[in-house]
Length: 610
Ligand code: ADP
Ligand code: MG
Image 1 (cartoon, rainbow, N blue to C red):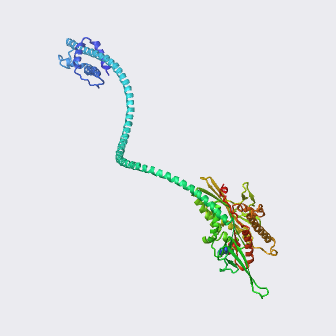
Image 2 (cartoon, protein in one colour):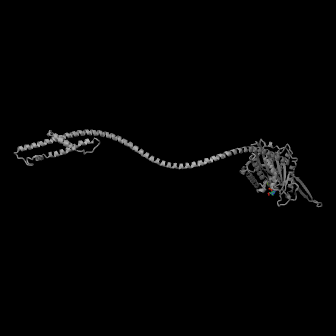
Image 3 (cartoon, rainbow, N blue to C red):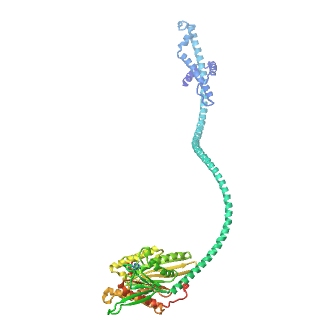
């Protein structure tokens, strides 16, 4: 854009260079008041604007010049004042024409001069502009690098801003937390205040308690002293009690021995229809004698009927009205002996139906309970009391039946086809045990009653298979008792045997055949052997034929020595049982008779306890 006027100005310059100076002067004069019209960039802009401004001015002036120059004839017309404007000179007016030409030349010279001036100015301006451009470019470069830096800084600042925002949100969160915590703190403060009040109260209480404690401690010391002396007294009394217990045992045993280590009691069953049997007479003076009276009719009828009396006396005779309780009172002393460490054996002997099972087991109702449940009850009760003196007892029960000289476990609960066989064995310590037999550990009365029920069930099962077998077998209930008094280092061991014997009735030999004969032989054999064994023991014979029957072999530990033996002879009061009753009484009195005089010796309790 700027070149066109420059070029034209060069051309004008060549035509007339000498008239430039005034034009330049005028230009500079005009340039000064021109205010910068261009955009100002940086501090150096005004200079550039100043440079450009003249160019604009020059353009205007050049334009005005060229427009004038482009219409060359107009100036002639305008300068033709002399010729009168557009008036043509006359062909002859050469002088006028020359002067016109000269005018034209002068005009052009002025124009050239002006243009040259303008050109110079422009060149100057261009070089200035170039310099400015270089400077501006440099500056631009600097600005760009600064821009880069700024951008980097901006990025950094953006990061910082992000961080700031994060920090701000953190701050908000923390502020909320702070508010929360402040709330909690206030609650805690209230709580603390109330706790402090409480603490104060507690402190006061504590001091009160401390003073009470001090008083109590003083009292405690007194009490401790008292307890110590009481303990000493208790220990002393325990010793005395133990000594008393030992003395009681010794005396009890002495009494039992005085009464006889082997005793025979007779018990008469009531008549089925009630009333008293005529042929059985009981002494009214004491309860030790019984008379069996038999009236023999005169064979000739001429003489009066004669009455034959059979008198027997036993340790005790119980009439038909004697209750189970009465009967047991006598035995309970022996049960006590069993707990004291002596073996005790109690038999019920008599014909079938005479009341052996009733005496030994009784019925289930309390009043009619027999010897076994009552003995068991007493034992557990007494063991409990002895427990207070440091005794600890263990009880083991077994129930065995002896039928035809074979043993049968009455507590067996397995399959009948798998019933094991049993044998009587003697251990090295001379104790008798039965192989494969159920020995049940018991600790209370109910357990034993359960075992008795089980035994009865076992017996009745066998009974249906073989009619009335129970009356032809012995049933032996054994309770092994072991007591330990750890504090005194004393032990005791004993067995309580309660035996319901097979019916003692004899059969006419011609009537018994086969199995019945075998049964009869077995029963007779074992019962008579029992009598022989007891007699041998009572007479202190060197040989006691225990091994002759399973019953005596099994009971050998409970018979003899310090053992207590009691035989019940049960009597059936019916007249048709007279013969069997007589036999029973004879057997029992034989046993009883051999016992006299009874052995009375010093108690060997301590020996048996160890
Ligand atoms: P055993 O066992 O000697 O064969 P039991 O004990 O079975 O005889 O007695 C036969 C019957 O007589 C049973 O019904 C029994 O209840 C009854 N009995 C036995 N002794 C007495 C008695 N002292 N008081 C009342 N009833 C008795
Ligand atoms: Mg019976």
